[in-house]
Image (cartoon, rainbow, N blue to C red; front, side, top):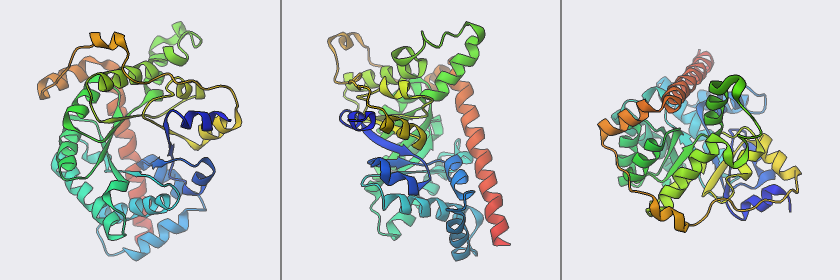
Length: 317
């Protein structure tokens, strides 16, 4: 079997793309999107008409409502291809506003349900800030399941587990990027590859903690830079992978072995961890990598949201 099929024996494979016309060839169970992926898709000739048609159909609505119509339109197309769930992201500019995040999530779920999609097939993506986690706690209590994204620190994962969120997305590649840049000339790619990759180690730590303490939140590794990072996390609950890397996996028949699994005897030494708001904020601040990458990620998603807004305004005029 190719590596992709081997990986599916251990891990639920998720496609990380807004390009729904590519999905069928990889047969993922779920798919994830974000503002950057949607912006990239609507700039392609295959998807530009979808954007224009959606804007035309909802021209009289406020801009933010049209944006949500576009996001859900992509989600609906994706759900015709994948049998499982689609993740649709709340505007990153609301990352520090829990009530606004909850309101936006309600509108997204309402649009999906109006189109006949049950909420069980949708994950609302929210940045893993303290406010985002608080919003997700509230939404989960309403039966609206969440995917907490831009997750770089262990404290974020712990808080998400305590909040009862459905799924988290630790960003493997961006953690790797930070450590590589920070090390500079001292970085040794060979020594830091595979299971020694700092992004891989971060996900492994979270996975072990969740399994040791029976936390039901699903762990989905995300933001991969190379196949080695993916193979090193075989056995993780889910992995969301770009079409480019899915193609690479599909083209290789190198063996894939389970790396993550059930709790091991050495996990008995793990201690329970909990954070209140002050403790969470301090722990996040104490992690320079997580602080920088979270802020950078929110800024980047917000910038792409602004670009999508501008495209929609042009089509409205």
